[in-house]
Image (cartoon, rainbow, N blue to C red; front, side):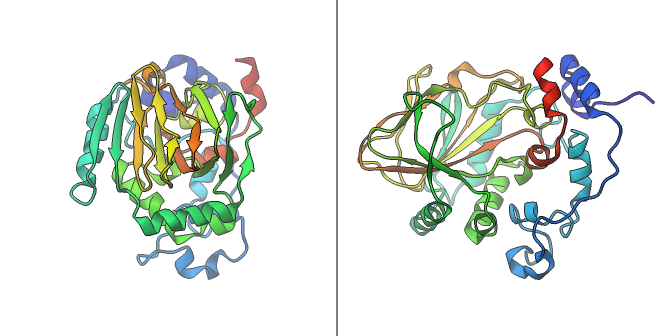
Length: 313
């Protein structure tokens, strides 16, 4: 029987389809296991009032949560669902305008820019939530970034990957709230990344995702959206600047901004999404971000195999 590439059926991208069919190999019949032993005993830390697993806690308890099908698909580098990106073209203005309307009247949201398409949610987090989320970040332990030279990116960061962070009720609340706002499943989000910029620290202009051929982006798609939370008011500096669009976003505690990194063709980057973290002049900037993919990212990140074969593309 001929192999079928699920993502290619959705996007009709022939080179990617060929790459997928080469990588998939024979079906993987393996099951899955929980990453921690006490999943059934976690109670409200894991299960909501309807008995469903909360996210991202579910990542620790895939078997208990009945998510083994997603694991099996991810091991074959297949996607479990294309919703809401089952069409090859996306109208990002309409997409983020819909998110703005969902946020009202509780949040005074607005579409701030068309190039890039960017929506602003000034009070997405309450003062109490800002403080609590900052404490989660500090407890998780900031480490100095060492993936890039400091003249390019100078920042302290930490990913929400520890058990204590994944099970934190506020983290779970933000995942759910953001999923509802965007209409995108939370498993399409990368883990929350906390950022700390002290005086003079910065990040030079960059795009959030260009290397689509690298796993697990091949099965999850590009980082189509960036969600950025500001957890402190910076006394001076620390703005998020979009130099190709002459746009500057002021860092105010509790604000969230969401922008599209790609064009209507979700496999092509939008040049207007080039952005930078302006150096902090006075005070400190604490922030957090999600990167959002069109297809499931978390299972793909952990279980999609054959990474070494991507080098030859």
